Every structure is written in structure tokens, then in C-alpha cells.
Length: 199
Image (cartoon, rainbow, N blue to C red; front, side):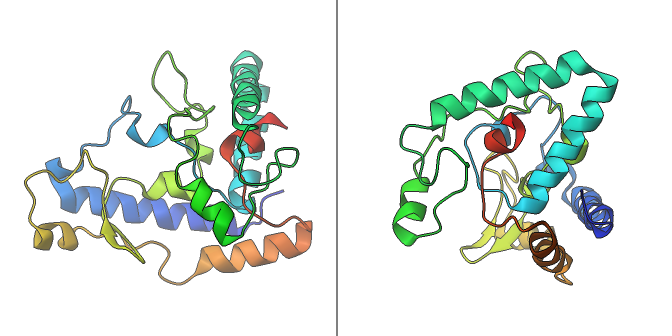
């Protein structure tokens, strides 16, 4: 079960994205049907897992057929990912070692997200998507600097891109919620969307 603060975190991120989109104008080309950020695996934490699973549960109540298709795509993805998985393919937990993280850099970069409907090009769990999905596209700061989606900000100067930077959780709410959630649930570690949805 998701902690009550997760809805606050989602609202903070959604508000930040709206503000960044307003400042970015036509440079931010993200739109429904663009699947640039839906192909290639990425690590998610246990709060993302719980949010995805809750979203799938709610979808199952409204549209059991659609939720079943997501589960089938997730199970097929898990089967493809098992060989060479940089972690435990039974639990889906990624190995946190430096060697495994280095292997993860080139792992399954062509694997579509199971929440992506291949017919419509839309995310079937959009409202429940992980934090990484919520911040992909606009300028976001990381240890490597300010990064943007390769399809966006064409023609913008570095200064113009910096002026559109999306502040991601400046008060550290996500880290606090995750720590509390992992402690209360007893589940820790990072995994992939496919493993979260195949359960």
C-alpha cells in the first residue's frame, strides 16, 4: 500500500513539469504517442513498484482485459530479460555492485516497457508511472550535469535550456517517503518495471 505522502510527491512533480513545459514552449516536444522514453529498461525503487502495482490493480477493476495484456507483456519481458540480468532474475532485484551497475548500462536498451500499449503508443499506467518517467524530457540536473531528451530543445542555447530546468523534489520528499516505505514494508532494492508488473 502506498504511503499517503506519495500523492503529494506526484503532485509536486506534476506541477514542476507543468511549469517547465510552460517555460519551454515548443522546445519540449514530448506528446502522447512519442515513445522515446518508453524503450530501454531503467531501475525503479520500491515506491515506484507500489505505485505501478496499485495502478494495475485499479485498472483491473475498470478494464480487466487491458490489465491482463499489461501482465502478459510484463511476463514476456521478464522472460526475455532473464538471460544476462544484472541481478537476481527470480526476484527481479538488481545487484547494487559496481560491476553489475556497469553491466546494466548496456542491458536491454531495446526492450519496450510493458505498460506501453504497442497499438496506441500510449502508457496504460500513465497516472501511476515511476518518477523517472515523470521527469524525462525537460532539463533535469544529475551528477552528469543538465540532461534533456535528445528529441527536445533543438535550437535552444545552453542558457535557454538552463532557464527551463525542472526542479525535481527540492525538499527531498521522495527520499524520505522511500526510506519510510522500505522500512515499513521490509522490501528494499531496485528492480525493473517488467518485474513489478509481472507479479
